[in-house]
Image (tube, rainbow, N blue to C red; front, side, top):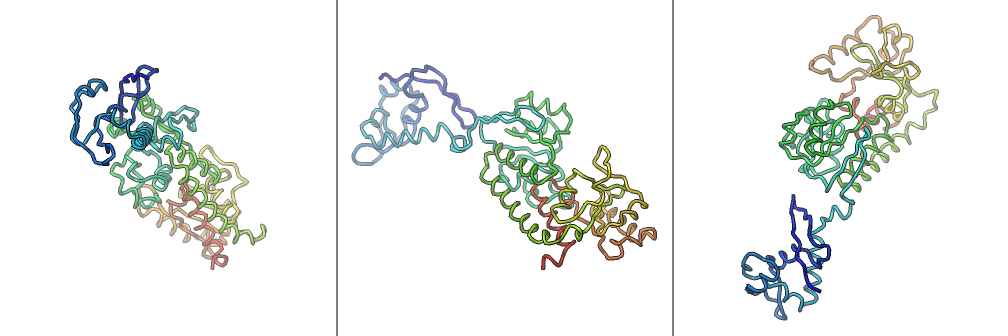
Amino acid sequence: MALQRKAVKIRRGRATVTGDKRSYLPRYTVAFACHWPLLTGETGKAERKDDPEARKRWGCTQQLPARVVPLQEVFVNAPLFCTLCCLLLCTALPLSAQQQGYPLRLTDDTGAAVTLSARPIRIVSLTLTTDEMLLTLVDARRLRGVTLFAADPEISNVAEAAARVVHKLDISVETILSLDPDLVLVADWSDAGPIRQLRDAGVPVYLMTSGVTIASIEDKISRLALLTGDTEKGRAMIAEMEARLAAVDRRVSKLPLEKRLRAIDYAAWGSAQGRGSSWDEMLRRAGLVDAVADFSSDEWGQVPLSKEKILQLDPDILVLPGWEYGNPRGAAAFFSQVTGDPALKGLRAVKTGHVFQMPERLKSTTSQYIVDAVEWLARRSYPGLFR
């Protein structure tokens, strides 16, 4: 069969072959033969050889370098030719693409289609949740940027790892494009304008909502692992979460419902998180009862609480902020204010010393670190079960 030449276009290390469909071998096969050293003949030694007629026949434009053999000589060595074919297959299709099924087309949490042509290796994360997931899921060298908050140990569970990522970003289109990302992860509530600009520039942008239950967070991890081509690592992350949650459940499940402690998180602006929040999920998994679960929440998921309402509910555990945005001393001042308030001295939580300041990085997390939050609450609420 006559061999026909194909033109090859290389972009970011991946070959796109165009040309006559009847061609027996693509041109990059010839380029491989013309420019890679091969063993020859029965001696098994590489030889310097150049054949101008062969170069003309195969379409090579440059003289063959030392220690290279024209392609036609390869055909006399069948084992060597088989090896060449295997190498060509590996070169033409990266292993990750073979394993993960790229190009990959998914729908993000807003219903928008996102297509990845290959496994992303220049990822930009613009949510703290995806920062925390990705810094466990992928090699940090694949991250071109994370959020400004990722390196703050008060609110981030990956501050040490995030410090090694060079770029700390907000949603600046110009800066993001300068990093040449092949995947950008953004919160679903982000401004539509910059997202549209990024997409118009050809950047795959995946919008993600925050998970508020263990199941939804695990689903986010699975989707993110599929996007990044790290499904095995994603499954391992979820398996670890489930194992640790099961260990907590084995202890707290011994408690009858009527003996489970009732808890409230009380914010400085006078509200608590209610049913359907990640906080509600943390309490339930830690063997606690959300004392405001039966109250209606506002549009932000908050239940307004007056001092009178707190006294009426009289929770066993009162959880106060461990951090206040823009005010390093704000959380400590609020703790002193609540525990020293004469009107709240009669609260069961105050009298028994069960007023806790919970680290904000745990209280507000919607990543796999929600398991750390569950463990933190369970151990402080039921220390006797964890001895």
